[in-house]
Length: 348
Ligand code: SF4
Image (tube, rainbow, N blue to C red; front, top):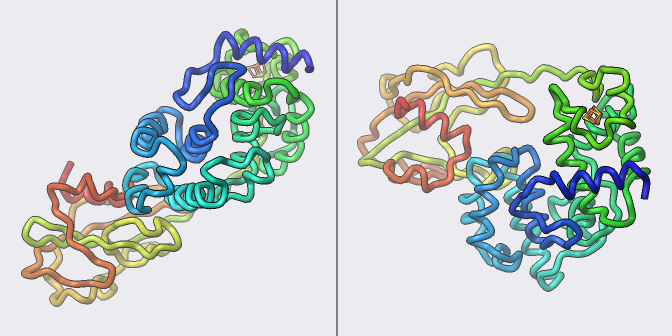
């Protein structure tokens, strides 16, 4: 084991974050808990994930239990975490593990990578943390720590390969799972994006960026492309204490989730005109504009939505539509983008 690995593990033993999905140092964690937490942590903060993780584990304590749950229930519990393809893959993966592997996760990186929704990072993390495989685990925290440690001038995302190789060089054969979690913790609590606490760092003496006094310059990143703005009009149609919702198509953005009917979300300088609105509703004066805009940012674009509302004289039956009680809107599992629209209408 390199002295870097030994120093980091000693630091981890004293300073690790206590997280509900983790085992004590040196012990193996439950692969199901590691997998669930890692899928949730993609694009989501630890603070947010904790509650969701606790709810999922209570409701579905094993992968077999999760596999047996209806997909709709899983999507509902997932609501608010975003990136809903993750939830669909989560369920698909649970089904495969329960059906094809007798409820036991494969214990190799390659076997894990073959599961739905499990990419290189997640496979390496589960292999290392749950099965003690000396896999190279690189997430955003690790990228930052390693590029500072070595003062790597190469820009991300191109630098990923070099960072992987550098991480692999110091990953120990003993306690690789603790090492991976230690790297994540170091990045999250000490080697933070701003104001890294180098005085508390177990690698302070070895770190090239600290020696040069320019840690915050790393990692170097290629300039980001600006996100385009898409615009749409969404419809809030109520009847007898119910609102009209749409079950979205199973594939694509927010697939299978409930939402409001809207014009297509297209990149355009202005909002769609009335002629493009929901045509099944008769008159032009039918809709009342709602004040303000609902704004939401997805990975690749911003969405600005104007809302119009109306009271329907009778229940319209639209394809994939359903009427949901307004006083139980919290139960339906609206993705955040639609929850923001609902909030705008209710003036909260
Ligand atoms: Fe990060 Fe500072 Fe530690 Fe270097 S010494 S790894 S910059 S916290």
